Amino acid sequence: MKTLIELYDERPIENVLATEVFKPQRTIFLCPPEVAQNKNIQNKMREYFARRGVEVELHFMESSLYNAAKLERQLYSITEKYPDCMIDVTGGTDAALFAGGKFCAATNIPAFTYSWKSKSFFSIHEAHFCDALKCDVRHEVEDCFVMAGGAMREGRVDNSILDRYLDSIDAFFALYMSNRSDWTSAVSYIQRASQVEKGEFIPLEVNAPYTVICEHGNRINAPEKVLYDLEKLGYISGVTIGDRVSFSFKDRQIRTWLRDIGSVLELYVYKACLDTGLFNDVRTSAVVDWEGDFGRDNVTNEIDVMAMQGIVPVFISCKTCEVGTEALNELAILRDRFGGKAAKAAIVTAHHCRNITRHRALELGIDVIDLEDLEDERIGEQIKSMMSRD
Image 1 (cartoon, one colour):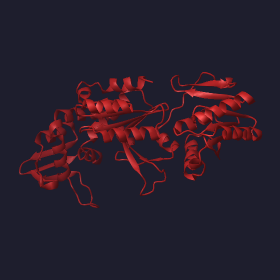
Image 2 (image 1 turned 90 degrees about the vertical axis):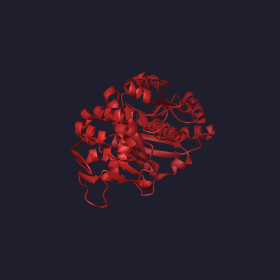
Image 3 (image 1 turned 120 degrees about the vertical axis):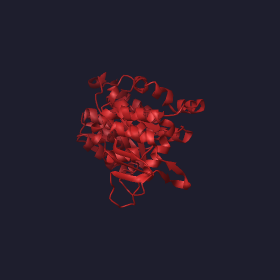
Image 4 (image 1 turned 180 degrees about the vertical axis):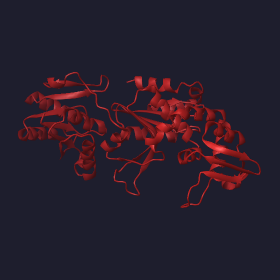
């Protein structure tokens, strides 16, 4: 295949998959003006293919994807210049598909599509080379962001070192569950007790009063049980409790986690995804830059846990507090913008989920894993169930 014609789609994966699989010499996108005139989007797509090791010329032809007659004329003009072309009708608008169908019937130009249900390509017209061809492409989390014109920024966690902590994550989460009612207060104490001025060297040693004053003048006593439990786990050492409290963090990463209320749940969900064996890439604290150029004022969002099963991304939000509609809406927007048609989303909460929240999640196509699932250690089963559904 020398020339591939793509009907541009709002779902990023629809625009890149055929080029990645069939590796044409050139791909021509029939796209709306906002894409044809946007060099940033075009350059990000070139960056994506370079990342994936695909050498291809990309051409962007401005068109109205709702004007079938104009689209058909443009298709004829492309075939005059590149008679060896084929057309992918996986994405695009109804009008574009109608124009593509008329064009192929009149010219015998091969056409094919991709079935998300069977994970295979199929010939629509004279594309016998790809009929029932299984897709074995495996994306990384960052690929989802780049193909959509974004970029992945550095998050709160260095994922490359997480394998050092995997053996203790389940025990860390069990400690959290046994101290769940006191966890927010305990972390608040640790935050205050280990606070340093911005720019100062960050020590691992802590020496603080038994009672500290937090925001709004709240007084919090040392969480004695939590501190002793953390010492047994090996996350802190040298705990002494009297008029003053002293201990040492195991390392800087542990210090970061113990100063953040939600880290323990995020780590547990991250490991649960790994333990299923379903995913080729799993990340925690995946930060997406929407504009993709790392500008200081760009819109960014953090996805607590994100995983890839082949080309299917999973967006997971973790909440140690009660889940609200705003959190569900934000998760759905991220999934749709950077995941597309086949993407999945789940919200994990360490609270009992209200029926009204479950109903809204169902409307948005978001799976809910709540406190009961966590207590019964069903998170792995829930993730597998989610991934088994079309």
